Amino acid sequence: MIPEYKISIESQPDSKEVDFVDKQLHEFNVSKIGDYQYRSLFLVLRDSQQKVMGGLEGFIGLGWFHIGTLWVAQELRGDGYGKALLLAAEQEAVNRGCLHAYVFTYSFQAPEFYHHLGYEVFGELEDFPPGHCRYFLKKSLQKTLS
Image: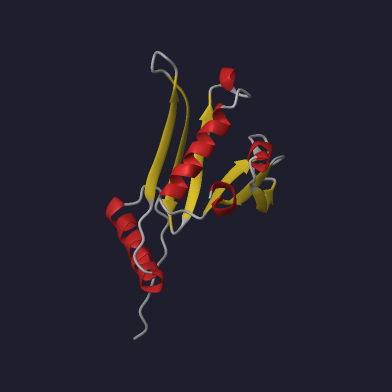
């Protein structure tokens, strides 16, 4: 007898099932490339009253540093704080064994900022969201920080 399978769309998935699926893919990946762990990297910019004025959140794994979020308060933009956060994060990524960095950004965000700091576009999605473009950028950390 041929087994019957059914696909269901889960609008509120069971966390145990999500964890199970994630674990199965992780185990498959480990069987191909060895054990790996993604580690968090977080930098924060504070003023003299300890108010958060900017930050960078990312993760490190498989020799790559992924920049997930880079934000600087509007009143500080253009003063070099974004660059300082990014360069400090890149240096820490190198210290933790990374060879490369990558980021996703939108046309209305900061593609020129990343390009100015040595990132190059390796992919783009037009009309994502409609009327804009999503860019995928990368940078070799070996050349600039070694």
